[in-house]
Image (tube, rainbow, N blue to C red; front, side):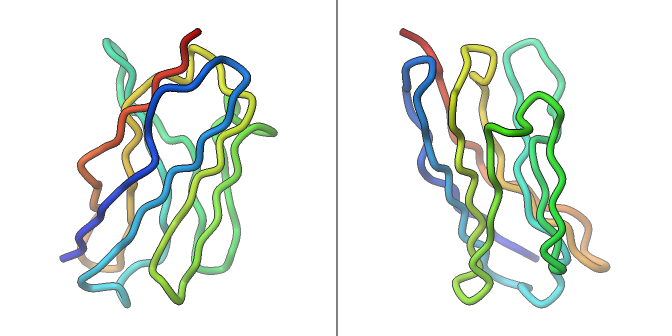
Length: 116
């Protein structure tokens, strides 16, 4: 199993920035990708960004050019730098890991609210 602990959410004004971080523990060697999903009230959970062990990344179209995902493999951490935040980015953000043979895991979620 893999355990995930997120931090960094909060309230920010439109146009502002936040950085989310997530630390993984447990069966780390089984991880082949880390990322972030989000879920806004009344909406389905959606992929925000993913970074693979190779370093390859992908992003939802809605965040391209504004969000940057990165990893620190030595610390088993993944980060999401969010710039130029919009009210529609308001959601609970979930750290996610994808593993070989163990399935996917999500953290408990951290709230991001973009409002003036």
